[in-house]
Image 1 (spheres, rainbow, N blue to C red):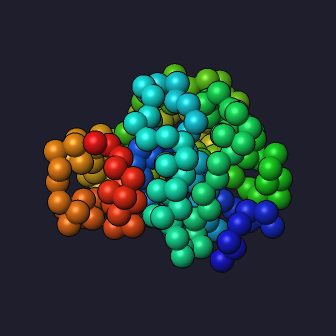
Image 2 (cartoon, rainbow, N blue to C red):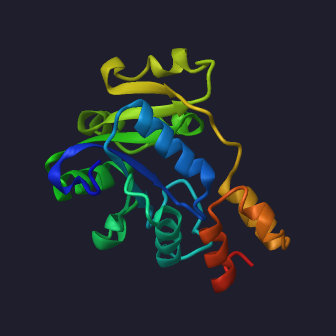
Image 3 (cartoon, rainbow, N blue to C red):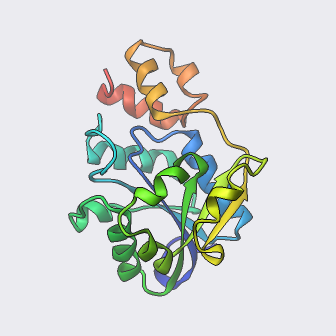
Length: 203
């Protein structure tokens, strides 16, 4: 398996605030990658997010947590492209920057079904579909069949996965309450828990 998309291959893009990264993010990426025969997944932390408030952790800390979470796993590449290119936070801009940086790779965009309703509110969704296919991780049964009919049938695919019930919001709440490292390690890689504790994040 390739370790970077520089040489080509079929890669997935998973963007998000990753504030902090948790097993739900990694599970979504890996299950979709496996089901869709991707060569790897590019994890792209957002510098800015059009639909969310300012992140609790800095971009640098979120990058480092992603590096901790994926260390030793060559199925993942962590990209700071939104910071490198000072992108405004819109998915279409990030996708175009990624395709320009890695012109030999074929790209699909990975998302969870919980974000599907937002898709029509994203900037220029038609342009997004022109640039990439959308791979939507979904827990069966496929309750979104009517909704996805609004999008180009050949550019969006529902991928059955085992979704994990974990969120960054819940993790931040638990961290603020002083939950144990053992409990946190059930929701996120232990290396990320240790990084958070070392730097006093989310207190």
